[in-house]
Figure 1 (cartoon, rainbow, N blue to C red):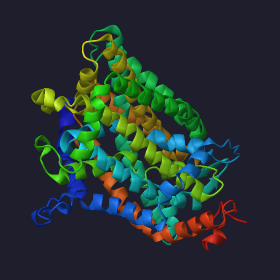
Figure 2: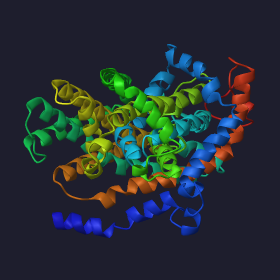
Figure 3: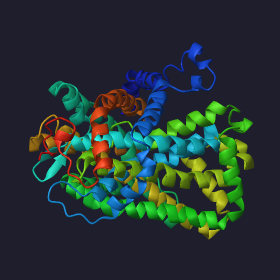
Figure 4: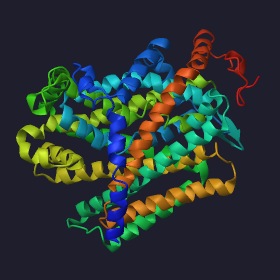
Length: 506
């Protein structure tokens, strides 16, 4: 079996370098790399960050000026007969945004770019909120009704904006489904392995991955995932409505307690972050561009603004106006990066373990680096076990909500290909099977890293598909936004943008 997996990995060895080439292009050319500061930014980052800046200007920085309006939308009680409420859509999108990357990605960014990377994550998030607004408004405008649900997102608005081409819609659906399916194995194993880690904390003993505990845990996780997935979008949101607030509150409260226990390190945190944003310490490369690049890249990869991968949740909402859901989506970016990622940053920066034991810090992986930081803030105490357990629980919930979110979003995207119930069930089954396969492969210790690299490749393909479409559809968002600002409370219809749209008729 190992020989078979090794052969598969060898055949697919080109995927990783190909993905890296597209993510890094054109920084992989010496002439571009030689350009000061800008030469550190790949085209993908320039496109994502540049679009955020441009869209922020065009919509009048609504991510800031209308933040209060967005928060009021989230707190309103809304009875819906079709689709889900804006709040439920917010929790569903947060289930996807707030994932293991909020711990691993932030830790990695700080490890490479220094504490200053966190500042640039905040900057990227601010402008990313505008991009999230744009794509979510488009998802709302061009959503379609399916029974008692709404379906939509990138494959749907992409089709309408590109000549109503069936081929375009199918292609975009396939790209997203491919991306999601190759993300599922890692998320599935993150859930199972984190449950194993919690078991080790409770029992005080090592649990082998090839053991009854891991196989039983995997079976329970997969069964529960199947029950949720086959319940449809409303079943999924019923779960995320409960899990997202719990995981967010537990994570934030746990970190706040850590901060209060280590108040003496708070001044260091702020001086390191703001000082490092412009003058990174030599240990991290000593280049302004290092902190900037890592912060922007990890921030955008964490909140997914501009990637089109969160638009399915925005379309599923029964919003009163497309711009309402745009504001809700912007707040989702704010929660992901400004709140959750900052909590991780507090732990890693306040502990500054890289100065305490540089050798151990350099040798450790992303998650071990994070756990080393936690241990440094709770040295030699029972409190360490409690905090580590709670943070591991959050990591587990982060991964699980991503798992069910990706299957659900794949189902929504699949509706652009076919609305046949057998086809939709087939997508659900495929998601469960892929997750199960990934869990078993990881439990067995087999290496299929090159196969999983497809997700990174599909992700960059989505970016380059979604951003141009946002510019094509921008005029419709601007018209909707103008009406939203000038005539608050007025019903939105397709006449406002001069198009016939299914769900916004008079």
